[in-house]
Length: 403
Image (cartoon, rainbow, N blue to C red; front, side, top):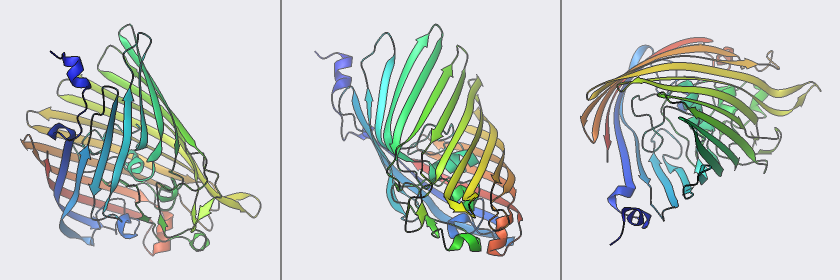
């Protein structure tokens, strides 16, 4: 008779347990400016009607995730995603192999290899790297979803030391060479969009200086300079319900490799995060991220075309009441253009407040309501003929079906 351990080691490729999925029907009402997804400077996925409200029903997303087990040690994750507002609408999300070593007294080893997101976001815990309790991710999570997907190899070692647990991860990767383009030319944004393996995002109106140098689109997963980036992550789990993590990411872009006027940006950041469960019904999340991105040749022998610092921070609280969950998040963000402001100003400051309510209708259906207000000041909006200071309110409801 086979033992439980032997049974778990058997391959499982196509049973119903290996498949999960999600479909979301959404109704959105928004005022304010045109969305960045339509080539504007808008901070959300919704285009507003100026001082009036624009109302739109749509299928916002659908996805299928396949997680076969190849053996006790080997598995895989493959996600196909449909996002009608993204080009292309149907795309490959993540696709990677997973490996875990047999238990060892020194450490537990695991790895993954393929196309995946670095473990930066504390919000994207749902199927297909979605946010279970909100329709809109934080500015940090949204940017990771847009521009920080990599193709690489990640190795993790986890060790218990008394009642504490420590985990260390390191990765080398390709891709993500254009990471920094959206953040520089559009600024921070808040949404639920995720880049695919071949996604192209539109850029907003560029300055006269950049129009002849930068393509009007950016392809976040592109590899342009044939050099490897890296990141490292440390996680500490003390004997209380807290997890503290730190990540340093560097795509090691060479700044000047280009293809069809898309450039290899040199983008790096460090982030600190905390997840705390003060009781079984409450989760507190806090995160701060700071970094810099550089691109292009020297201009007048002194300045790079782009030399920009950026930062964002947020704190959120989720409280669960039976089938209900209430989430509130407050955040701030900024970019600091350190060069050529007179001809290409990419400075920005802003803040956002989000409140979301999730009601579980059944094990496979959730109803979500969310209100979001975002305010920002960005001088480069003048390149598109709009005022630098913009405010937008977005009210959304969604029926989220899962299997």
